[in-house]
Length: 131
Image (cartoon, rainbow, N blue to C red; front, side, top):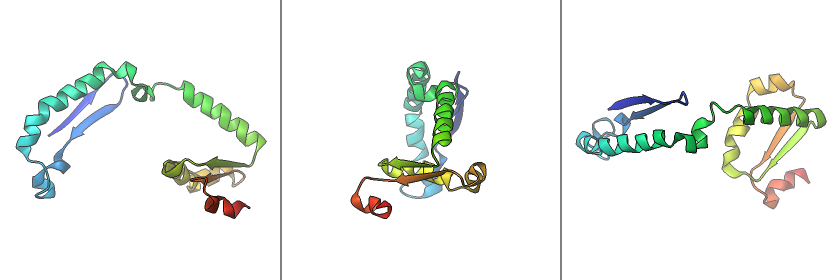
């Protein structure tokens, strides 16, 4: 069963459980009957999300450009003053940033004049290469 529901924040919320079904993934999957039984609860949970979407700032991120504009201003200021930025101790959550910074597009935009260095945690072994 696949549902696509839209809301005032212009994002699509798709409920697609076909890859959870036993008929698609084998004996450890869910039965269609079980999904059908749970459909009322699934719909109810979605309706609660929609009803409280104004309280969930995550859902408003697409419409809120204030933080993006502020981030752009801060990034410009950093690039004007420095040629390296060290990001310390954010662990695995730095993977997205590392991936973006490793793209040819990023390198092209910066003409290799600006470097962002991620140090995933503050353990001595991570700092050792900078000493």
